[in-house]
Structure formats: C-alpha cells, structure tokens
Image 1 (cartoon, rainbow, N blue to C red):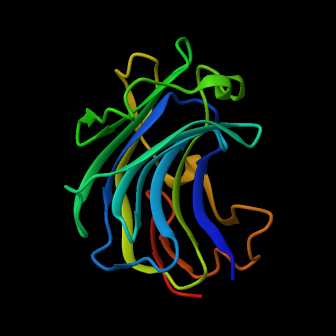
Image 2 (image 1 turned 90 degrees about the horizontal axis):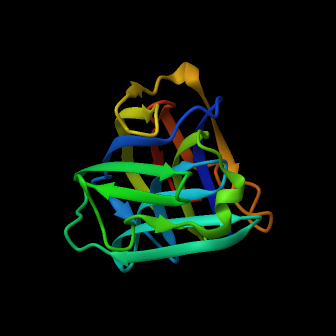
Length: 205
C-alpha cells in the first residue's frame, strides 16, 4: 500500500505567530520502507517543521509550501537525538520578513534559522492557525510506541512575549490522508490518546 497519513490537531482561530512544545520521542520506532514524523506547523499546509525518523536515523526538517509546491525544504540528520528523548521545539514566523525559525532545545539549527519561506508568505498573515502533526509515509510496515507533545504553548504576539496554553477547546483533531494518491486507510492505524497536546501510537497496516 502507499500509506501517507497523519493525525492533525489544528487551531480553529488564525490568532497565533508560532507554537512551542516538548516532544517526547517514542521509545520504540520501526520505520520500514519510509518514515514517521512528529512536527508543528503554521498555516493549513504552509510551514511545517519538526523531527522525522527513517533508516537514516533522526532528522530535523523545515519546509514551506505554496499552492502545493515547495518554496523551501531542508532535512538533515541530527545524531544527538535518541529514542525516548524529550526535545524542546519552538516554531516562529515573522510575516514582516517572511522568515521562519525552528528552535531545537533552545537554539536554531543552521538550516532552520531565519529561513526565507519565499512565495509561501502569500498564504499567511501576521497571525495564523497553527498545528501539531504525527505522521507516516511508507508501504504499511512502520510503527512506533507512544509519541507525545506536552506543555504545548501558543505564541500570541509578534514579539514572543506572551504564550497561552494550547487546550483542546481551541482546536480540532482528526485523521487525514496527506496525498490524493495515498491509500484511503493511510491514517487508520494511529491510536489517539490525547488531542491537545497530541499523543498517539502507530501500528503497522
């Protein structure tokens, strides 16, 4: 099967300039003919950034898209990441400069630092919806034990001075099939334990 699915929690309101969370990586991960990932995003499908796992190990990525086409993408192995680790992630977007930054444990990485997202800025404003995603793209064989976002906070202003706790009533959660060519059952093997913050596990198809 061509499995490309996810569990997505996205805010109802476009009122935020970023999001910060603690990602607790699964203690057991089996990536077969593909990858699994856990990330945060700004906009419906505009800026997405976080951590993936495949046969290459853990990678940190940041991507931006506009009208279905990538305007920026970079993903590199980070050997210091390990199964079961808690990783601080913070994603911010400055609409005045069209630049996004992902901080990992308090510091941006060279390929996630003040990145120009190109034409993707046309799909965003100063304030936007933000999202949490747990995803998979494979042929049906991958799995992981519990993955958790915790202490998730919404960035409320352009200066980053104010954050509010992301609670379940602020967002909607559902299983999504990422690509139109993917199997309709792509997200069916996710078990969802909590919506906000998002906690899941994944079984093989």
